[in-house]
Structures are given as structure tokens and as C-alpha cells.
Length: 479
Ligand code: UD1
Ligand code: MG
Image 1 (cartoon, rainbow, N blue to C red):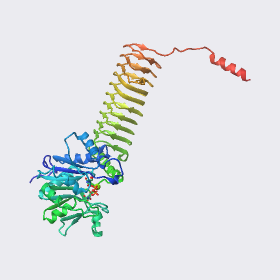
Image 2 (cartoon, helix red, strand yellow):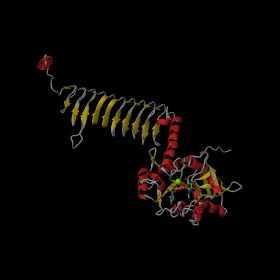
Image 3 (cartoon, helix red, strand yellow):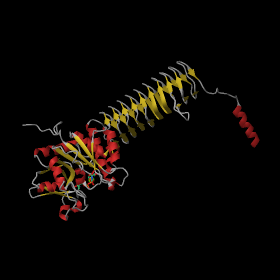
Image 4 (cartoon, protein in one colour):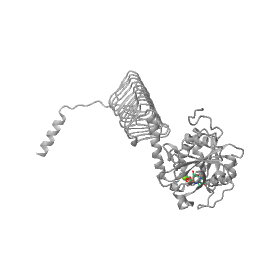
């Protein structure tokens, strides 16, 4: 017996996919087209495009229309020019009309074609692959993915079956009879079709429905009436194909996806004490035995190594973090943090902050476009911008690099094993050598050579008995 272990790589090669994304998304009430709304760092459309890639489809055709240029530009920036194909639907006359727009691209294509909506980001590659497998097994003209909802099926299209349990039609909610409205098996808008039979049936669509549109769903009835095989796969999880039509649904689907993302991380060994207050984008990577404490937000292309403690309250975007890092109450963006660094509380790493291994950044320290080599410590109240700081140098509390002269940014370079005294003001461009020392409160404007002490402050003046004399004078005046 052949073992069946779910979808195998390469098995679905030759499948083309059509993503319907031309709609006006009126119900979103937004300037942004629906497919470009972000869900955990990824546009809605990219979620479905990733699932298609996982299901091993060989061509991905996106039907664009409303704000086509913006959709195309965002997707091409992400995937590269020429990776996706586009079909344009100039007027949005329904999902069937949208599918018709791909006819010329697929004119010479006789394989299977998957059609998916652009607004169902929970669909997984696994589910899509199993739909294709079921479709091929029966050699069907069409196979649809359905879901049985626990409660009322709302605005979804209803799946109508005959007395043998075979699918005969999909009826849109607006066109359904009161009896049909009670059906809880819904059309997910995910279908596998034999391409030639799909395009033949699409030509017979008529807009005789409540919206006056060409419905893709009517293809099912047409194929069935023509005696073709129409199959259906019922999704195990009723939520896989939840569609987003409003911002309420964006939040609801987003919440489910957030839980899925955290679940995957926990199953891979990440510790998350409070999933209710932990937020991780879809493409973030986290190593095992790292703990994400409450209030942690990991965004964009962030990668975190093993055995780290992140949070409570960390907002980290597009940042690379090594192993054994501790980062509490901090904000990081486009930064790099080496192994064994300790960050925070209340630290801010801005773009271009590069911390090598074992660096310590303490309370109210801000770092921008600066390399801090291994073992540097900046414990308190500093701004280090446009700088390079050598190994094991200690930055005293309140040290500021004055990098901006009102016109241009200038660099501060500090060597290794140096000691920058408390409240040093480093006026860039300036170079401080290795094993050198700046006295507390100095304003450093000139180079400090290796091994030197630089004192750049007023000498202290002491006037013996001055204060007591002054007090006595005042007291004499008022008595
Ligand atoms: C559609 C299905 C419905 C199903 C539901 C699942 C139809 C007629 N109805 O309804 O049976 O239960 O999805 O979520 O197919 N689009 C275009 N061009 C158009 C119209 C729509 O490209 O002219 C795109 C939209 O951008 C969207 C997708 O098709 O990504 C689905 O359109 P939408 O308006 O959301 O359909 P639903 O009302 O959700
Ligand atoms: Mg929809």
C-alpha cells in the first residue's frame, strides 16, 4: 500500500492559479485597496500568494482592477518583476467576469486551475494542495472547497446539494430562498477547475441575479447541468476560508492569524507566557527557548536567536538579534544586536545601530547609525549617533555625540578600551584614541590621542567662607 502523508512537493506541478483581486472593496471604506491592507506585516494578497507557492502552483495570475497600479507595484516590489502575471478587469462586473479576464493568458493551457479570492488570508498551502489532490483523484471538471459554519452563514454563498449529497449549485445569500438561507455549508470561493471546461462555462454566464453581476459561482450549476463531475471538499476547520470584507473582519481574522502564528512559534520551542498580549508578524523568526514576555511586538523582517529574553514591552521592527540577548522595555528598528547583549530598560535602537557581542545598553540610551564593538557599555542617558566605538570602551552616563551642525551629520570615532567620562559632549567630527580618557563634563572638540587624558572644562574655583559671609550679610540687612 502506498503511504499517504499529505501533500508532497512537486505533486501539483503544472497547476495554474488565479487570484481574484479586482474588486472595489467598498465595504472596507478605505483609500487602500483591500488586498494591500496589512495583516501581521504582510499585505492580504501576499498571504494567499504565499499559500499558493506552498501548494506548488507553477503560475500565479492576479486579476487586478480597482487601483490596479498600486496593487501591481506593491506585489512586484515584493516578488520581483515578472514573477507574477496580471490580468486586468477594467470594470468590476463580478467574480465570473474577473475569471474571464484570464482567458487569453490561459488560452493554450489545458491543465488544472485553482481560483482563490484575494481576501481569505487564513487559507493554507496544505488545504489548497489537498483540494487539488481531491480534484485530480475524481478527474472532476470542478471541485470546490466548502465549509460548514456553526452559526448562521451570513452573506456567504450557500452550497446546494441533491438527495445523493452531490453539489448542484451555489446560491448567493442575496438570491437565496428562505429555505436555502438556512443552509450552513458555504462556498469558500476556492475552486479547482479543469481550465478548458472552466473557460467554456464562463462564456455562458448571465447577470440574472440580485447584483446584476457575472457570478463565478454560477459555473458550478452550468457544469453540473452539462453532466460534468463537480466535487466538493469540506474544510476540516470552518475558519480556513474566512473572507475579509470589512475592517471588523480584518481584526477578527487578524486575531485568528495572530493565535496561529504564536501557536506555531510555541510548537517550535519559543516560550510565550501570555499569548494574549504578544504580537508577532507572519515573517518573524524566533529561535527555541527564547521567551517573549507580555507586551512584545515583533514586526517585519525581524529575526531573533535562541535563549533570549525579550520584553516585557519590546517593540522590535526589521531587526536581527543573536542568541542569549536580554531586551526589556525597548524600541528597535532596523538594528543588529549580537549575542549576549543586554538592552534596556528604556533603550532605543534606531536604524543602523549595530551592537556586536556582549554590548550593554542601559536606561534612556539612544543609538543611531553607530557600531558598538564587542563589550562596549553605555549604561545611562546617552545619545550615540553616527559613531564607531571600539571594544570594551565605557561610555559614561550622559555622554552625547553632537553629530549635527545644522547642515550635515558628522562622525565620532572612539577607540578600544577607552573611558568616556560622565557627561562628555563629543562634538563631531572628532576622534578619540584607544585607551584614552575624557574627564567628566568635558566638551571634546579636538582629537584625543591614544593613552591620553583630555580635560575640557573650566577649572574649579573655591572661595573660602564665601557662603557663610553672604548669609550673615543678608541676615543683618533684614533684622
Ligand atoms: C464571494 C462568493 C461567495 C462566497 C464568498 C466567500 C461570488 C459571486 N460569491 O462573495 O459565494 O461565499 O466569496 O468569501 O463569487 N472580485 C473581482 N472582480 C469583481 C468582483 C470581485 O476581482 O468584479 C474579487 C474581489 O476583489 C475579492 C473576490 O473577488 O477578492 C471576492 O469578491 P467579494 O466581493 O469579496 O465576494 P463575496 O461577496 O465575498
Ligand atoms: Mg469576500
